Image 1: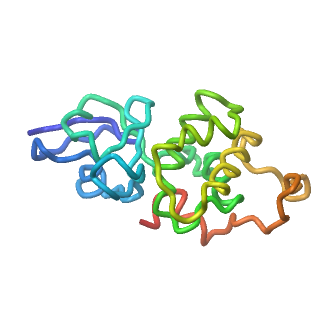
Image 2 (image 1 turned 30 degrees about the vertical axis):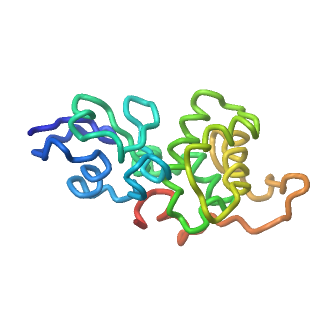
Image 3 (image 1 turned 90 degrees about the vertical axis):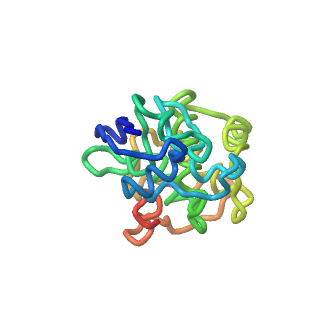
Amino acid sequence: MQVTMTVNGTEVTREVEPRLLLVHFLRDHLGLTGTHWGCDTSNCGTCVVWMDGEPVKSCTVLAAMASGHEVRTVEGLAHEDGTLDPIQQGFMRCHGLQCGFCTPGMMMTTRALLDRDPHPSESDIREAISGQICRCTGYATIVRSVRWAAEHPDGAVPAAEEEPAAAEPATEPAATEAAQPVPTGSAS
């Protein structure tokens, strides 16, 4: 069957099997490997993308169901000029990346949260990511990353103006070129 959808602003049409999952369509047919494939059961959340602006777990959405809709992946989070979205910057600066496996889904979910609520509480953030699993961090650095993005909606601030948050150790930001592939989806 033929499916047509807009992915990260570009209309795409492909012939697919009717049972093909959206996660496999994105990864195997379009080469967008930033969307990770974890459980196929909607448990882990590594596969979260947006469909018409709402986070969905792409392992439980058929590509045919996305036909006619707008899909956005982690590769589509950065701005058109290549500047990273504040949520991507936050994950880099606050060490929310860790191993990187859950990162794309976490960023898609938390970006949607910030779009709905620019100043979420810690409990709001934890509730938003409750459908996702991270085995590395205990979620503290992920929550800190989202809070950083909420405090910096326009992105990075000059290093001279940035001060560590109270009760947090001062660390060097992880915002290096080596760290960029994970938050943009290109390291997958």
